[in-house]
Length: 262
Length: 339
Image (tube, rainbow over the protein chains, first blue to last red):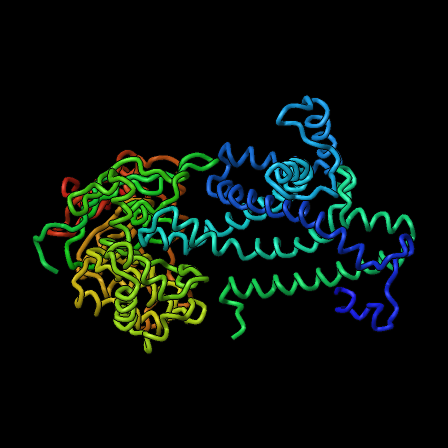
């Protein structure tokens, strides 16, 4: 199907793009690898954003409070400690130090062939995703919560916040409606621009947890001089980056009436 | 101005302090004044004299920290506003006391429509539904003189000019028929023609709606045109308080006198340089124990270095915080020590 979309299908008599390494069409391989990446990296991005937004909001509203200080420390750690370190650290703790029969034991190797069919297999899927998702979510949350905090702080000092208070609005409405709507404008852009990276996979984390996603595919293709594969992947990333830049720009207009084009 | 009516707002010994890294700043010191129903009280003073901080202290709009209201009572509608709980305070803000801020360009939320921003206090304080609030918002916009109100409700603040935005701010402040409207330099950010329009509008609305207004400004010309009574503030204190005619005809405090001489005249000979008051306003690092204007005063006498002047009555509603207005000190003697 993908081949047909891009005119690279064999049936039309056109030349298929064949991987040098495996001699199979690159789109087939990519389609095979995509679900793992989207599950693990995508989930970590969603989790990261969901954690980051409330942390950013509370940190800014209670600036210099203990919550803010701890949040700042954790995001500093999350941002500066590389994922290959946190990943291995988690493996050491949850896969070796924790006994095998404990409910806290987590598998260190991601089983790609695992299929979710019932509740038990779903639980196993969650367990094997837990560590890579946590490692990546920490990194994403660290970054986005800082953006959120800075943006909230910018807006909390604005005159319209005082106006909202002078109108007798509750703090909840002032912060979660008036301030948040304004603060989301730059943050949404950052979040949207981060989405292509999800498709790009997380090269290092995928290596650590043996998730054979797109990141790992790219690395092995580069190592094996698999030019068609590398070209296809990089071209795909390029398209995604342009696409999400466009989406970010459109979202900007949706959120901010001042730059709407009507 | 109805005389002898019970004040709608009665402020006594208000004291507000800002805690900063460099120590405390005593922004408002023992300010007392009252406001009668339907009256327009002008508050003048230069930047940093505590005008805005006083009014924001009244309704708890100052961010705390760093601000802290240390002392005083603010009686409004049988409640002391400094001691009411947060929920009651929110009912009063925007409901019984409206507030118009200085800069209309930044005082409206850029991402919400004007209609929504006017409807917000209506729905909260008057319990209106969406439709009723919208109908009232149209009325309000027409009241403040915005043409084509129905359609303009769906516009965003950036689609309005500065003067229009200030009209919208006034509409928001008036939304719930407040008893008191506090206008914090509402015309400062506007050019003179728009300023005149807003002044006319406020005069008209005040007679139409019968509310009391506190008008903060540093423009004495505006005060002369609009106020019933005037408070002159300096260094976080009230230095003179008088009916508007008395203040311009017979200013008692040297600061007021100096202020009046600084107004450039349109007619008459044009002087080369504008008259100024020498020196800088005081830095309010500690609670004042002496007259704050002492250092810049050209009528300073020996007693100014020892004691703090009280507010001495001059006539019926006129008082001034200066030893020259103290009937206990003979005038000639006091002036004799000037230097």
